[in-house]
Image 1 (cartoon, one colour):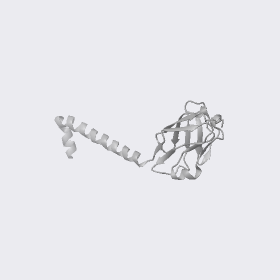
Image 2 (spheres, one colour):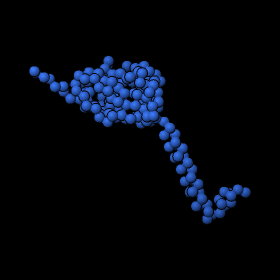
Image 3 (cartoon, rainbow, N blue to C red):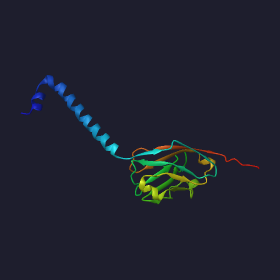
Image 4 (cartoon, one colour):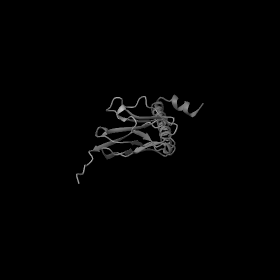
Length: 159
């Protein structure tokens, strides 16, 4: 007979051993999940960017540790718009069919930087209406990050 079986036969020990065993199992599962999550990359980004209308701006977003995003799906969204997709890239190619028309021909990722985990978005010819909260998603990462873009009017000089 095993020691565990003998302990379980005792009514007094049954109530104290069972919760202990369940606690050990739960702790092992939590430790296993934490280990697998820490091995994956996470996204880091600037929290806020300020630009002037007409300028080009880079919404900075990167995988840490740096893993290649060249063959992954990278999605930039702005949930307050319909459609919300600002830029979608799959397997290294832009997917324009779901892109919001306000951003057509004004967005790009840095192709050579994708292999280093840089998924930053270049937004050209910024407009006042581009101000808002943007979200960066990468296929291999569970969580997204947000970046707030504030756009001001460019100053015009009369001199």
